[in-house]
Image (cartoon, rainbow, N blue to C red; front, top):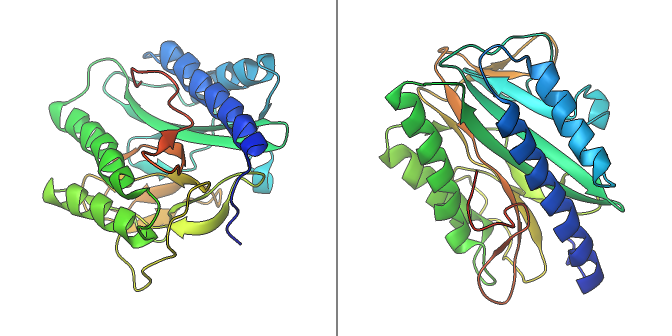
Length: 253
Protein backbone atom coordinates (compact mmCIF):
# COMPACT_ATOMS: atom_id res chain seq x y z
CA UNK A 1 0.00 0.00 0.00
CA UNK A 2 1.33 3.42 -0.97
CA UNK A 3 1.30 5.92 1.89
CA UNK A 4 0.99 9.69 1.69
CA UNK A 5 3.02 11.33 4.44
CA UNK A 6 1.60 13.97 6.76
CA UNK A 7 3.47 17.17 7.62
CA UNK A 8 4.58 15.67 10.93
CA UNK A 9 5.81 12.52 9.21
CA UNK A 10 7.70 14.55 6.62
CA UNK A 11 9.58 16.40 9.35
CA UNK A 12 10.75 13.08 10.77
CA UNK A 13 11.68 11.90 7.28
CA UNK A 14 13.75 15.06 6.83
CA UNK A 15 15.67 14.35 10.02
CA UNK A 16 16.27 10.73 9.03
CA UNK A 17 17.44 11.91 5.62
CA UNK A 18 19.77 14.53 7.06
CA UNK A 19 21.46 11.97 9.30
CA UNK A 20 21.71 9.48 6.45
CA UNK A 21 23.49 12.09 4.33
CA UNK A 22 25.78 12.94 7.23
CA UNK A 23 26.72 9.30 7.60
CA UNK A 24 27.70 9.17 3.93
CA UNK A 25 29.87 12.26 4.38
CA UNK A 26 31.58 10.69 7.39
CA UNK A 27 32.26 7.47 5.48
CA UNK A 28 33.56 9.35 2.44
CA UNK A 29 36.06 11.17 4.65
CA UNK A 30 37.35 7.82 5.95
CA UNK A 31 37.79 6.12 2.56
CA UNK A 32 41.42 5.59 1.58
CA UNK A 33 43.67 2.74 0.47
CA UNK A 34 44.29 0.43 3.43
CA UNK A 35 40.99 0.94 5.26
CA UNK A 36 38.66 -2.04 5.68
CA UNK A 37 34.98 -2.02 4.85
CA UNK A 38 34.28 -3.03 8.47
CA UNK A 39 36.06 0.12 9.66
CA UNK A 40 33.83 2.16 7.36
CA UNK A 41 30.81 0.40 8.81
CA UNK A 42 31.86 1.45 12.31
CA UNK A 43 32.27 5.06 11.16
CA UNK A 44 28.69 5.10 9.87
CA UNK A 45 27.19 3.42 12.92
CA UNK A 46 29.01 5.71 15.35
CA UNK A 47 27.82 8.79 13.46
CA UNK A 48 24.20 7.64 13.19
CA UNK A 49 23.91 6.76 16.87
CA UNK A 50 25.55 10.04 17.90
CA UNK A 51 22.71 11.88 16.12
CA UNK A 52 20.02 10.08 18.12
CA UNK A 53 19.13 7.68 15.33
CA UNK A 54 19.58 3.96 14.79
CA UNK A 55 21.26 2.27 11.79
CA UNK A 56 18.33 1.18 9.63
CA UNK A 57 20.18 -1.64 7.91
CA UNK A 58 21.63 -3.38 10.95
CA UNK A 59 19.65 -6.54 11.56
CA UNK A 60 17.25 -5.81 8.68
CA UNK A 61 16.33 -9.23 7.33
CA UNK A 62 19.39 -10.51 9.17
CA UNK A 63 21.86 -8.15 7.48
CA UNK A 64 24.87 -7.79 9.81
CA UNK A 65 26.13 -4.32 8.90
CA UNK A 66 25.14 -0.68 9.26
CA UNK A 67 26.16 -0.06 5.65
CA UNK A 68 26.21 -2.08 2.47
CA UNK A 69 29.80 -1.89 1.21
CA UNK A 70 29.94 -3.13 -2.40
CA UNK A 71 33.37 -3.07 -4.05
CA UNK A 72 34.14 -3.08 -7.80
CA UNK A 73 31.92 -5.74 -9.44
CA UNK A 74 29.75 -6.06 -6.33
CA UNK A 75 26.58 -4.23 -7.30
CA UNK A 76 24.64 -4.12 -4.02
CA UNK A 77 24.41 -5.63 -0.53
CA UNK A 78 28.12 -6.08 0.09
CA UNK A 79 28.69 -7.14 3.71
CA UNK A 80 31.29 -5.10 5.65
CA UNK A 81 34.23 -7.26 6.68
CA UNK A 82 38.04 -7.26 6.90
CA UNK A 83 38.45 -6.60 3.17
CA UNK A 84 41.11 -3.92 2.65
CA UNK A 85 40.41 -1.28 0.02
CA UNK A 86 43.09 -0.85 -2.62
CA UNK A 87 44.14 2.12 -4.73
CA UNK A 88 41.89 2.20 -7.81
CA UNK A 89 38.93 0.37 -6.25
CA UNK A 90 35.46 1.83 -6.34
CA UNK A 91 33.04 1.25 -3.47
CA UNK A 92 29.28 1.76 -3.29
CA UNK A 93 28.21 2.75 0.23
CA UNK A 94 24.49 2.32 0.91
CA UNK A 95 23.29 3.51 4.31
CA UNK A 96 20.10 4.25 6.19
CA UNK A 97 19.19 5.99 9.44
CA UNK A 98 15.96 5.62 11.40
CA UNK A 99 14.61 8.57 13.39
CA UNK A 100 11.56 8.07 15.61
CA UNK A 101 10.39 5.21 13.41
CA UNK A 102 11.01 6.89 10.04
CA UNK A 103 13.74 5.93 7.59
CA UNK A 104 16.27 7.59 5.32
CA UNK A 105 18.08 5.62 2.61
CA UNK A 106 20.88 6.79 0.31
CA UNK A 107 23.89 5.50 -1.60
CA UNK A 108 26.97 6.89 -3.31
CA UNK A 109 29.83 5.24 -5.18
CA UNK A 110 33.28 6.54 -4.29
CA UNK A 111 36.69 6.07 -5.82
CA UNK A 112 39.54 4.86 -3.62
CA UNK A 113 42.56 7.02 -4.35
CA UNK A 114 43.17 7.50 -8.08
CA UNK A 115 40.76 5.54 -10.27
CA UNK A 116 40.61 4.85 -14.00
CA UNK A 117 38.83 7.36 -16.23
CA UNK A 118 36.17 4.85 -17.29
CA UNK A 119 35.39 4.04 -13.65
CA UNK A 120 34.94 7.74 -12.95
CA UNK A 121 32.64 8.03 -15.97
CA UNK A 122 30.55 5.11 -14.73
CA UNK A 123 30.11 6.81 -11.35
CA UNK A 124 29.19 10.12 -13.01
CA UNK A 125 26.68 8.61 -15.44
CA UNK A 126 25.03 6.69 -12.60
CA UNK A 127 24.63 9.90 -10.61
CA UNK A 128 23.33 11.81 -13.64
CA UNK A 129 20.79 9.08 -14.43
CA UNK A 130 19.24 9.64 -10.99
CA UNK A 131 18.71 13.31 -11.76
CA UNK A 132 17.25 12.43 -15.16
CA UNK A 133 14.81 10.14 -13.34
CA UNK A 134 13.65 12.63 -10.73
CA UNK A 135 12.62 15.07 -13.43
CA UNK A 136 9.53 12.83 -13.44
CA UNK A 137 9.17 12.41 -9.67
CA UNK A 138 6.28 14.85 -9.78
CA UNK A 139 2.56 14.65 -9.30
CA UNK A 140 0.75 13.28 -12.34
CA UNK A 141 3.59 11.28 -13.87
CA UNK A 142 3.83 7.51 -13.56
CA UNK A 143 6.56 5.39 -11.98
CA UNK A 144 7.44 4.12 -15.47
CA UNK A 145 8.35 7.68 -16.51
CA UNK A 146 11.13 7.64 -13.91
CA UNK A 147 12.20 4.16 -15.03
CA UNK A 148 12.35 5.12 -18.70
CA UNK A 149 14.40 8.25 -18.05
CA UNK A 150 17.00 6.32 -16.03
CA UNK A 151 17.29 3.47 -18.52
CA UNK A 152 17.46 5.69 -21.58
CA UNK A 153 20.24 7.81 -20.12
CA UNK A 154 22.29 4.87 -18.88
CA UNK A 155 22.06 2.94 -22.14
CA UNK A 156 22.76 6.03 -24.25
CA UNK A 157 26.08 6.21 -22.40
CA UNK A 158 26.98 2.59 -23.13
CA UNK A 159 26.17 1.05 -19.76
CA UNK A 160 23.34 -1.21 -18.54
CA UNK A 161 20.94 -1.19 -15.59
CA UNK A 162 20.52 -4.04 -13.13
CA UNK A 163 17.27 -5.98 -13.44
CA UNK A 164 15.10 -7.49 -10.67
CA UNK A 165 16.36 -5.11 -7.97
CA UNK A 166 14.77 -1.69 -7.85
CA UNK A 167 13.94 1.44 -5.90
CA UNK A 168 11.00 1.64 -3.53
CA UNK A 169 8.74 3.70 -1.37
CA UNK A 170 10.08 4.60 2.07
CA UNK A 171 8.69 5.76 5.40
CA UNK A 172 7.95 3.82 8.56
CA UNK A 173 9.20 0.79 6.64
CA UNK A 174 12.51 0.72 4.82
CA UNK A 175 10.86 -0.82 1.76
CA UNK A 176 7.32 0.28 0.99
CA UNK A 177 5.20 0.38 -2.15
CA UNK A 178 5.65 1.29 -4.93
CA UNK A 179 8.53 -0.55 -6.55
CA UNK A 180 10.59 1.71 -8.84
CA UNK A 181 12.50 -0.23 -11.51
CA UNK A 182 15.42 1.42 -13.31
CA UNK A 183 14.17 -0.05 -16.57
CA UNK A 184 10.88 -0.13 -18.45
CA UNK A 185 8.78 -3.14 -17.47
CA UNK A 186 5.34 -4.33 -18.55
CA UNK A 187 3.71 -2.24 -15.82
CA UNK A 188 3.38 1.51 -16.23
CA UNK A 189 3.24 1.83 -12.46
CA UNK A 190 0.96 4.01 -10.38
CA UNK A 191 0.51 7.72 -10.81
CA UNK A 192 2.78 9.75 -8.57
CA UNK A 193 1.14 11.93 -5.90
CA UNK A 194 2.32 14.73 -3.65
CA UNK A 195 3.30 13.43 -0.23
CA UNK A 196 4.81 10.19 -1.48
CA UNK A 197 8.37 9.38 -0.40
CA UNK A 198 10.43 7.41 -2.90
CA UNK A 199 13.91 5.89 -2.71
CA UNK A 200 15.13 6.18 -6.31
CA UNK A 201 18.36 4.28 -6.92
CA UNK A 202 19.97 3.58 -10.29
CA UNK A 203 22.25 0.51 -10.12
CA UNK A 204 24.42 0.61 -13.21
CA UNK A 205 26.75 -2.00 -14.71
CA UNK A 206 29.81 -1.20 -16.79
CA UNK A 207 29.15 -4.26 -18.94
CA UNK A 208 26.13 -6.54 -19.22
CA UNK A 209 23.49 -6.65 -16.49
CA UNK A 210 23.32 -10.42 -15.68
CA UNK A 211 24.24 -11.00 -12.06
CA UNK A 212 24.73 -13.68 -9.44
CA UNK A 213 24.29 -13.72 -5.66
CA UNK A 214 27.24 -14.81 -3.53
CA UNK A 215 27.05 -17.69 -1.07
CA UNK A 216 26.33 -15.26 1.76
CA UNK A 217 22.86 -14.84 0.16
CA UNK A 218 23.26 -11.06 0.14
CA UNK A 219 25.95 -9.70 -2.17
CA UNK A 220 24.90 -9.23 -5.81
CA UNK A 221 27.75 -9.22 -8.36
CA UNK A 222 28.13 -8.75 -12.10
CA UNK A 223 28.64 -12.05 -13.95
CA UNK A 224 31.20 -10.54 -16.31
CA UNK A 225 33.32 -9.18 -13.47
CA UNK A 226 33.04 -5.60 -14.68
CA UNK A 227 32.44 -2.64 -12.40
CA UNK A 228 29.12 -1.41 -11.04
CA UNK A 229 28.00 1.88 -9.49
CA UNK A 230 24.99 2.88 -7.39
CA UNK A 231 23.45 6.27 -6.59
CA UNK A 232 20.39 6.79 -4.38
CA UNK A 233 18.43 9.45 -2.56
CA UNK A 234 15.18 9.41 -0.62
CA UNK A 235 12.85 11.83 -2.42
CA UNK A 236 9.71 13.63 -1.26
CA UNK A 237 7.15 14.35 -3.97
CA UNK A 238 5.74 17.88 -3.54
CA UNK A 239 3.31 20.10 -5.40
CA UNK A 240 6.31 21.38 -7.36
CA UNK A 241 9.89 20.16 -7.66
CA UNK A 242 10.92 16.99 -5.79
CA UNK A 243 12.63 17.52 -2.42
CA UNK A 244 15.74 15.43 -1.79
CA UNK A 245 15.51 14.23 1.80
CA UNK A 246 19.01 12.75 1.79
CA UNK A 247 20.71 15.64 0.00
CA UNK A 248 20.12 18.58 2.38
CA UNK A 249 23.16 20.56 1.28
CA UNK A 250 23.79 22.40 -1.97
CA UNK A 251 26.91 20.42 -2.79
CA UNK A 252 26.53 16.68 -3.36
CA UNK A 253 29.08 14.12 -2.26
